[in-house]
Image 1 (spheres, helix red, strand yellow):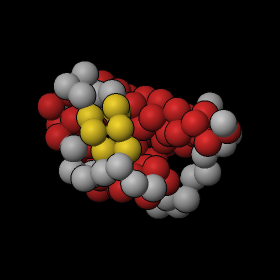
Image 2: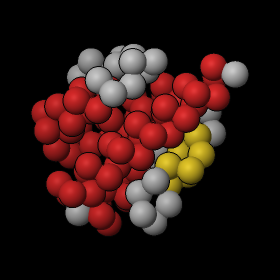
Image 3: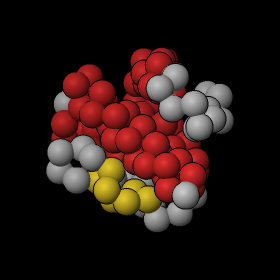
Length: 94
């Protein structure tokens, strides 16, 4: 039962990260970057509706996409969001 909650945390965290990037980068750029992570299904509103693989790997890939574009800003955004999800570790370390 706990696994479902962790998966829900990842869905929420990934969605929150995309939505924050939509504010900073604009919706089309943020969603386009998110859709480059092949294991994520991302709605037109920026919500992650499915993760087709290891959610930690997907998080790392998504963070890398944004960090390649906006560096420290994306890292700081992710760090602040991770505080809300204690079940998810930050392994991006970028």
